Image 1 (cartoon, rainbow, N blue to C red):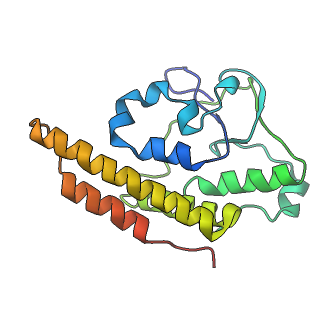
Image 2: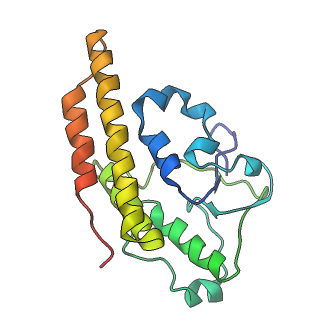
Length: 188
């Protein structure tokens, strides 16, 4: 998968961990993210070459029909990215590996399916639900606690930015992050 400019995109991923999600959540790391690929879950061994990975982004999946049906297809309880991770984890459990392929090249527009202001809420809900499904309530609580801790770090970062005269709204940002972490759509 390539961008409109022709550069390889980060299609191959590691199954999500709390650490990957914390790195994505931390505001101070935003500028460093282009260099933190493994830290946010990208499988750097798969960039621009054929490789077996934990999962691939769902923008263009070729799936074997019978195994797809055998594991129940996409779990509609998920929204925003977690559905393809969950599917590929179930396929992996049944012996079907996820592979990034070098050819053909597919141009990815990026972000076209999610212009909604609810995008971040959907993403957080799905990640919490994924943690619950694959690790139980303890894993979900651990992820939520880690992201709350990261939100506290973001608060202090944004206070420092505001004190330095940068455009920052520390308290409203903190409150909005906590609100995202309080809700849970659930898997029931």
